[in-house]
Length: 247
Length: 275
Image (cartoon, rainbow over all chains, first blue to last red):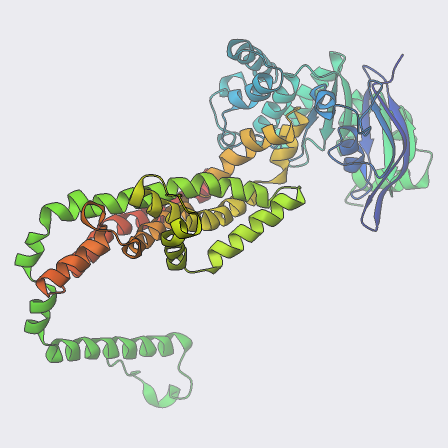
């Protein structure tokens, strides 16, 4: 069976700055993997290498068996199968929520307007913003915007969803709605790679938790082990700070 | 006006900044009023009126001022503007292209046409048929004027578009690419429409600049049905040996440019809230 994601000896430099120093990991179809770690540890860069928003300096990334950084690979076709959700939502501000969800269906998948609209409405309904179809992003709360962004990705029927700190830009009271949508997706069997600071979500929803620090994977295992009973000092220190910030 | 501090003795050395500012402002008003009074007393109003404000001469300009002169000015300006809008966008996209030669060509074009006087471009256009025998700019004077304004306007409009394109956050392109759009498609579905919105206020100002530069058609040797506002005013002034037509032409420009200036200001303000 092919892995949903396979990463081999991945390195990424930004000039002199070595952000990823040899990452090896796999994600199996249907798995939910949460990547945690201090800021600057390279987790977002790792995620962005999966759909080639960042070009790896060295190493290989396979999605569904296709090497994404192979110059011969059709990167647009690979990306079509990968949904991406950003920290800053990145909705298109000149389009309504409905148009945001329709545009790529029409332009990329060549779906007719009627089909695209039907699928868009279903997905907006599914993430709980069905009544906001005609609103522009600026008229929506952060939580609503992020759910529209999830619907936009889902409308492309992705086989894999990438989440780059999807709740970090949200007011605390809006985080729950977005996490609930992600939890629902996980229950439906979506393959998900999630960079997050939400330990509760990681503990309850993830099949595996990956702890990164300094551009390497320090610990990789089921949440009960990595969060519940960390083996490494660095993991312990990080979790201590995240779970008990006041002490 | 003469606001001396009331309790001067104890606080003479230490006027508060606000008081000092009030006195300073009072002095400025006083100077301004004195200058206006002097102007009113010493100007030769009768002579000024005789040379610049002869209503009978202004009346002679009337139908043609709008039906010919202003109309031509608008045709030149709008034509040059459309030309520069289309090519400005193309040059801006070239300027930001990852392809080196596109970038160099665009930079070269912008530097040349922003760096030379618009008048010089018009003079070159006059000499084009000499350089290229058998070549004539299509649509005669209209074509020449629109070409001249368009060539110059393109350089400025390209810089406006470049700023607009760069103002669209990178995340927009990333989101579009993540949805499987090609670089070109992402550019035209997501980035360009937002950039156009961003550049509406500076583009309005650019149109005003082109409208004023359209007066350079004077140097194309226009006459008769092709005259623009400035040329029309100048011709009438020569005929009647009186400056009134030039003043009237100036006022006619203002009828168009002042509202456009306000519009640009309004759009600028609205932009802050729309994103």
